[in-house]
Image: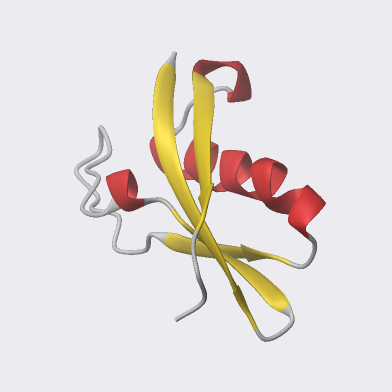
Length: 75
């Protein structure tokens, strides 16, 4: 299982979710991931949205992903 750091902050009506470890991630096919941010409407949705985002980028099963969520002050 891989643990990913997830930084979240509120921006207007959205929770912005950043996963720094995904920056520059290279897939088995050689594609390079350029995005590290997704969003959730509600705080309760953050973990599911982050997990879905990570699993899509790294092509992993949800059970192989653990999250360390940190709420940050809004910029």
